[in-house]
Image 1 (cartoon, rainbow, N blue to C red):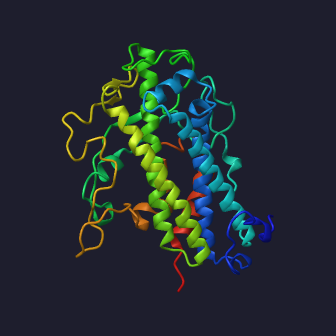
Image 2: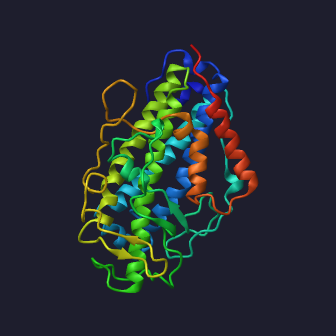
Image 3: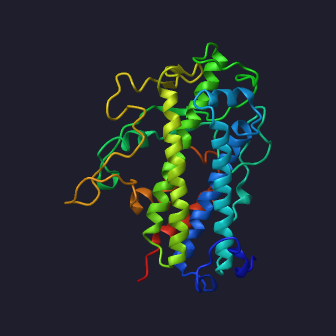
Length: 345
């Protein structure tokens, strides 16, 4: 266990509160957030191994760079950020007398067989995803899911890998011109495009989750932690929201995966408010009845953005495809406890 006195040696230590035990609600919130960050680290590490700064799959790197020349750096930095969140939250829990979170026993899912991927057990699956892209249209509309609105999918990404699966269908030495000209190049570009939308999906979910959890916190120091990490999730989302637009705009738009048929259309043709790729800032929306529209993170309610909603969304994404019933029981118990937390006044 880390000593409380040393935990925040490189930061600003709040007067007094770090020496006290957390109340049960705040502990539950931080434990779920730690679990969510551990899950994020696992998926980001897979992306980083293949497509980060030291990414070991040249064709995947090239396909990602077709979206933006800085994709490798962004992937590595996002990975490092999530790792820092997970480590900090667990260390903080221990410093306040609460149990940390460990999901190592569930690292049993297979790795990609493509060049660059480490052959180790995983918590998450990126080999076949159903990516919810409704965040793209949600943030371009004036509708708010917390008030009953729904948003259509921007791109239908169903049962599509977000990382290369092997070196047979996507050889790591494949050239990746824009637009791609061979079946292997089109397959790899579709995989990279899927990853870009998945990056946006994951990070917008984090932005909403932290907003939702902040409303339940009692301890001012815990609130500081939640809103401070949550702000980084928003920053991540903004970057990926911008970069993914290059998959559905010229000159790259129109890629069709030759194996799955998943298509990345030109969303700027004909364009419009809900499709235009450069409209990356949240449009003003209904937020509190009787007041003007306002640009906000949405959703932020427990029902739509809380811990249970997050696990259900990840499950629908197929992020946990192949996981055990024990894993689902563990993470859902953490989620339910976090959602049940109430701010004490």
